[in-house]
Length: 91
Image (cartoon, rainbow, N blue to C red; front, side):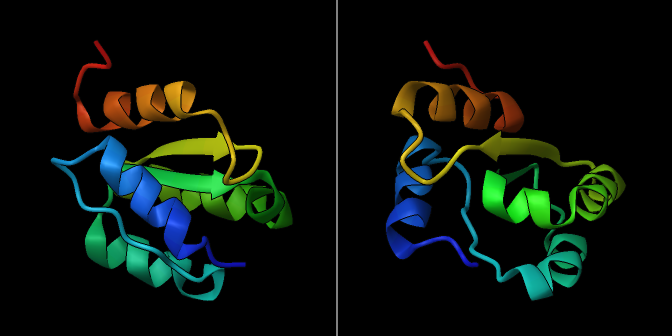
């Protein structure tokens, strides 16, 4: 399962100083290693498929792992988590 273009654009609008990249789970390890993200946002459905893998990769690249129930998560907590990951402020 890949995130929708809508969700990627939504995340990008919440962290305009960062770059949001989409990734197919099959390419996750390589993309995370290549791009060294500060945050990785995973819907529960994707995370639950292989939690140890996602935790391990996030730790290896130094990324904050942000779990969300689905792409329709309320904006305020999503923005707060994203800004925390990129060192911004939600105020």
